[in-house]
Image 1 (cartoon, helix red, strand yellow):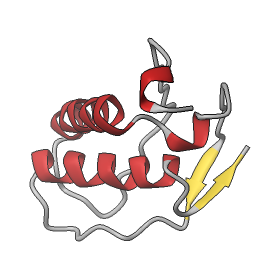
Image 2 (cartoon, rainbow, N blue to C red):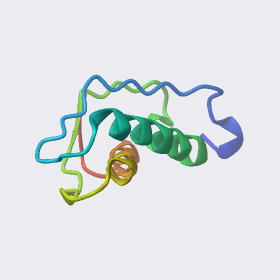
Image 3 (cartoon, one colour):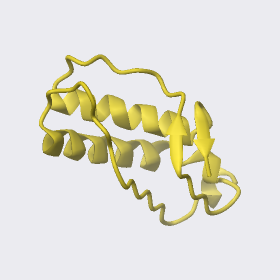
Image 4 (spheres, helix red, strand yellow):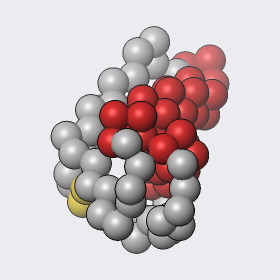
Length: 94
């Protein structure tokens, strides 16, 4: 699917973000995560879904994140890690 053939809507639904070992405000992390993931999907799409609809149960094998990040930075880095997983990096459970 080329750039001109991207779907008109992409829906990413995440059931749970587990933030173990972080002291950041979960609400602020979630807001930053949503903003950054939206930006990345709008800019780059979801490469794993280029062949049609995709349902993913879990992404694993993603790079670790440092525990001392601010809520905003943690949300951004987490979104980048998830988008990397949706781009074919890491392991996908369907």
